Image (tube, rainbow, N blue to C red):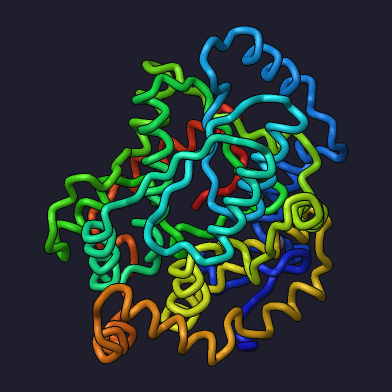
Length: 377
Ligand SMILES: [Zn+2]
């Protein structure tokens, strides 16, 4: 590890995050934020909180339609466990929505099938038009943008919110949780996927095809218009219970034959390439640091173990080569093209127009109102 890099004494976030600050005990601002705002919100039992029980009773008694709520599923641990918990513990009947961006791994498809069949749930799959998906992804490559996953992330949550609004579903349950996500990566590594102005700007500069059917939904549309004018509420039930990653994986494996991934978010082959290769090799940002730090702070992994994991590349050389070739053939570009893109000058999200200041102002208000407790900067 580079000796210039300063690392937090408790978690594994370090000065590869340029805005990180440390107090006199060597604790980073994420750890301080965790102690001040998140720690006392972590639950240590699996019984639904009073708040969650009351809410599910209310939904059951008032709901007249077949489905009590909408949930998104990727095949990853958070969303799979969410489906299990809602159906078996809260006894709600969710409609499950999966967004196929064209990059599903074989495991993710199998996992979704196992969960949906095992729990006897109804599934709808929204397939993103591939030409548009490809064009937007290539635009982000051309833009030399660190967060190549914005198009995929945007397609997923925009599909979910737009579907709920169109079909008058009042509750969306998401797998968002403090347990594995209490440290959010700095925006420099992973800028907001919900900033539509930013997406449109990059597509205008580099895109070749019109985005006609690609699902779009600005952060202000779903946080304000959908919430206050359409009455759609977003619930994060995994924050109301003890959500332990290891235990959840074991349960999913034993009960449904679910298959584990090497890393968080590797259910998408594109995300595997982006996090394990693009972001790490080209920009020097390792997203595992935020994820592992979340697990350290919630006592699910020891710091030494996390450091050991970080000392090894997330994908080995053979795997990296395979993913590189796969991405080229899928996006219909040559290896030479991708090599040239890899070698070109890195850009920052701030090199392109965005709603950064407006969104960050909104984040500040949400933090003031304690709707948002994570540090987002
Ligand atoms: Zn820290």
